[in-house]
Amino acid sequence: MEGRRADYTLDEMCAVLAVSESGYRAWKQGGTPDRTRLTDAQLLALIRAIHDALKGAYGSPRMVRELRGRGVPTSKPRVERLMREHGIRARHKRRYRVTTDSRHNLPVAPNRLNRDFTPSAPNQTWTSDITYLWTDEGWLYLAIVLDLFNREVVGWSLKPRMTADIVTDALTMAWVRRKPAVGLMHHSDRGSQYASQPFQDKLKAYGMEGSMSRKGNCWDNAPTESWFNSFKNERVHGLRYATRADMMAASFEYIEVFSNRTRRHSTLGYQSPMQFLDEWRMAQHAENLVA
Image (cartoon, rainbow, N blue to C red):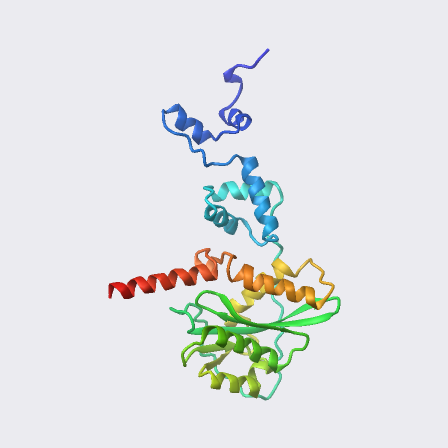
């Protein structure tokens, strides 16, 4: 015998009929139901597709922004629930490990940055650092230059040896791409590569002012450390790279395609670095037209 209407709850019937409760209520009151709302099954399939495409980079906060950015209206509690119930989570974060060797007698610059991580415009403050990457063929070393304004990697270099040329090459790439005005502040740790004469000569040639973290204090360069942490969590930890070429290809994809152009950064209001910079430029253009 068929069940009666009173035998089933509203959420049970909506689940069977693949409609939303809010849509049913809107229809019941004579309105138009929200046909853009996905069922849990549909939303879960989309979350899984994004999770796979982004290689597990996003937890629920960024996943919500990504879904909304794709025109899918949803709530944070709903996304959190689906991800929790189905074991979908961002790749595990590891603790920071000190890799800087500041045991040298080279001159060091004062900490002029003083943890001011929010410049008002691009090309005012760049930060740099180096990290280690393991492959079956041996180590690779990645040096980056980060524009603090929009967290964009504007220069980088990947080499099998951690010599001074790795940081000078990264800085050269950044300068060629951006051509900043004289007076830009460049901040790094006290590592011998950054304190070396070739690197200091390069800073002087580009008209940049040097700044260095206090000894043993990684928080003085926190945004760059955070970028490396995200990179390793999302592309390195738990994965095996057979060759240096494989690691180079993965690094290129992460920096130039994902991190700079796609990845939603919480410090940028969950925009990508390029989107954040483009919107700032449009706002500046509009202000100049009004002026």
